[in-house]
Amino acid sequence: MTTLDLSAIKPIPGFDCVAMKREIQAKIYEETKHMTPEERQERTRQVSKRFREEGERFRAERVAESQK
Image (tube, rainbow, N blue to C red; front, side):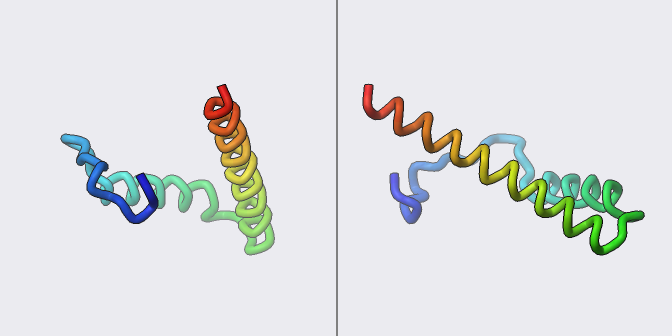
């Protein structure tokens, strides 16, 4: 499947993407509402760093699996 081939992706019954998005936004708002702009920027840097690290780990695992 390529990034443009979405026909293989099946909907998940009962999953509401918009509700999930709103829940995540509300959680982030609660976590950051009393932060200064600098604190929010640092939080964003840390979250982005963790996301990149997880992506790199995932890619490394996929490469290792494909070489077996």
